[in-house]
Length: 372
Image 1 (cartoon, rainbow, N blue to C red):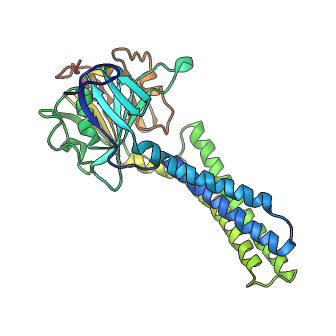
Image 2: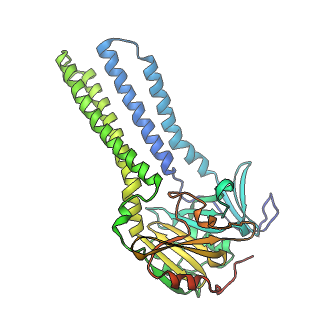
């Protein structure tokens, strides 16, 4: 086998992105910037043809937003297309030219896999290191983007041979276990109407923001209709370029605010409830596995040092898994509480019916040790 040029370690696996995509937040930033650029251009056309004034500053702003839209879309594709990934005896390494980023294999607490919606054999492998909470809280992750069979790559990180069924995200987690691995307990979060109600300050504020955007969209639409009536009464022909540009500009503005309102409400209320319904918990003799739609969390039980139970509504219990590992101490509840909601699946089993059975299973010794 080859050796890494930086550390001199033996390379266990190496690869490159099989599918290069734009991160969702940058994709939406590109779309919003493009819509703003188009709206500004149409407004400039309407102002120039009706009022006969200079619109150079408006066109300059439109060009700037169009450039941002293109940059948000193309830069991630350009950057990710040249990434290289390597797993050595000691480290996981991401490199691009002279750029290097790495993490110690032994310090990895758990992994998240984000399968691609359209390509069942491609996904992102996010390796997470448990860190303290409070003042020392920080995010330590490394992501192998767009790789083929991310669950097989995770097996290499763990130091085991990948199972034959691995590599297909359309398969259930129970069908992609390690060789000889047995399921000891499985369940879904108990169904409850309260999943449609935001339970934290962030969710409540997001919902209020979404509702305020809905009201704003209606007010903007009302003002736009009133303004177009004034323009028509001033003698502008409905079929003129200036009026068509004005209508298109106002329509895009209302649509942008309305889309933002729908997106915020969906992200704060609908999406969490829908994902909770799709969540499945598995505890095997070796690991804790959580599957939620196209997202998965893989946690070796050797990393769990304690389980904190938190009673919740309906007699159910939330179980927070406290993590620990070599060079990755996560004292107190920080293994579960180290990241905010919305940053991905967490090592938390929510709305569990039989919490005592789960705690009893997790406190028994796993059947195998983690790879060194």
